[in-house]
Length: 87
Figure 1 (spheres, rainbow, N blue to C red):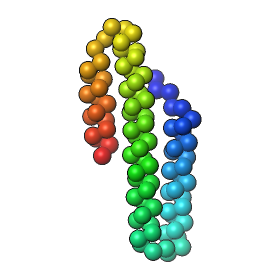
Figure 2: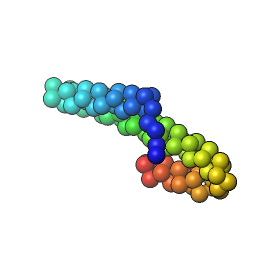
Figure 3: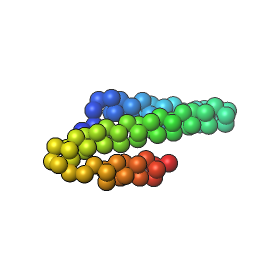
């Protein structure tokens, strides 16, 4: 089971705040360029959060597999596939 630490949750809370801000910008009919800039920043923040979650999970799974004498190669391939699919 994955443990989502406060850092990960705080990242998502910040993204939530960004998205609310973007919605407010839209409701206030802000310039398209400003909205797109903020949407792009939110997407980047989501991508980085995905990377943090996948890498943290991978480290945990690799340690667990090594402790149990299991191969870690499949875990690494699965993590890479998760990152690729997220794009």
